[in-house]
Amino acid sequence: QVQLVESGGGLVQPGGSLRLSCAASGFTFHYYVMKWYRQAPGKERELVAGVTIDGGRKSYADSVKGRFTISRDNRKRTLSLQMNDLKVEDTAVYFCKAEGMGTDTAYWGQGTQVTVSS
Image 1 (tube, one colour):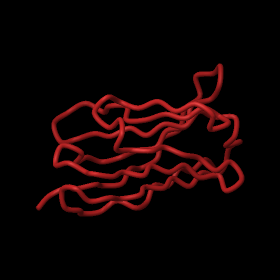
Image 2 (tube, helix red, strand yellow):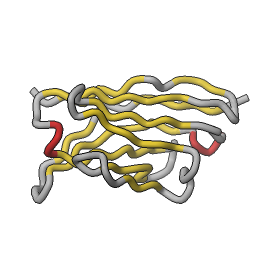
Image 3 (tube, helix red, strand yellow):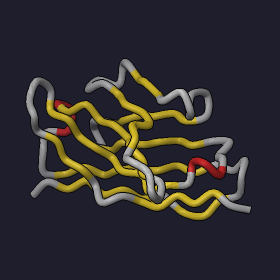
């Protein structure tokens, strides 16, 4: 059974940090491009960051560049998102997604809530 389980969300003050994790099981993790998305209330889901299958290339939305860092550990089958200097506008549910290389296969996690508020 395929599972992507996010954790690490919570309530943090502006300027604070959080580290999200996504634990994968049930599929060949190192064959999948991994991404973080987020969805704020009343808004569409948006891509936050992505990382290639070997972790060699990373990409970020302009809104998080320089503040967020995506990483993966293929041995531990985990994806992470280090979020620093958090802003109120980063408040959203954060989802991890696995995308199969050259296929239409994709898996989503259930999401973890991040709330940035003073």
